[in-house]
Image (cartoon, rainbow, N blue to C red):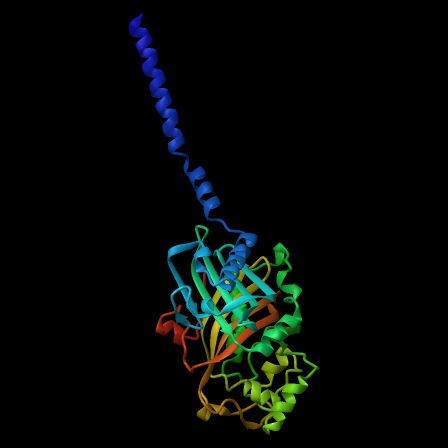
Length: 359
């Protein structure tokens, strides 16, 4: 009798232990699902991190952020302690907001305006999220009041950037980045004879201004530049006076007049979104000057154009790609020292013209 009760009690105890152990050691599939739920950050989640970051920046208080222990922060290519740089001088958020999400890579980009000492500025931002904490922060700060005001006059980014590509027409991340990279390859030492994959209605906005198909002129800027004896385009972009922002994307490239952009390097595609056909890249446009300013264009002319001293554009550009062609481009840029790096690449990668993107 007692032996039977003992045997049943021991069996019950062993069964209980087995059940508890089973709960503690969940099946691999369940563990994977739980881990994925913990790691996942959808579009709204990524955009929320941007908003939290910008709110903390406007309040000059990085302690508001959820950060990894090894968080890395750069501003204009310089690695800084989080809380330095614009963190000391930001006074509020602006009205222009453009979010670019990469759910698969847990990265998000942002183009927008802020206030610094009460004046409008432009900020390009990239955040990498790990386990719902900010692991990487990359910023470009463009302190140009006119450009910031122009961006805010636009009101919002082109709606095409948020339209979904039909599933049957989507391409891989690699193919999307490869198509966008043809823009950089076509501009570098541009000869007008390359493969330029632009749609007929392609349009490009640069620092809030129409850089293609632009029939209007900035009369105030024109008057200021004309007073100095220069052409508007030559002063702003160092191009031949016959080059025009009225041209289409393809016509500008076919002109061969962008040859003076001698190298486009450190091409990092940091956000790639096949669902919307969008890719965000950071890059540097070098102008070597000197002998590179003189070249022959497709119509047979020999021209001498471009910057007279070496310098670089620090760039952030977003591309919308459809059916293997670039349809929309929005760019932010500012002049920086020749050969400057991003703070996110080795020296070799920083000098390379090969594109890079996450798998």
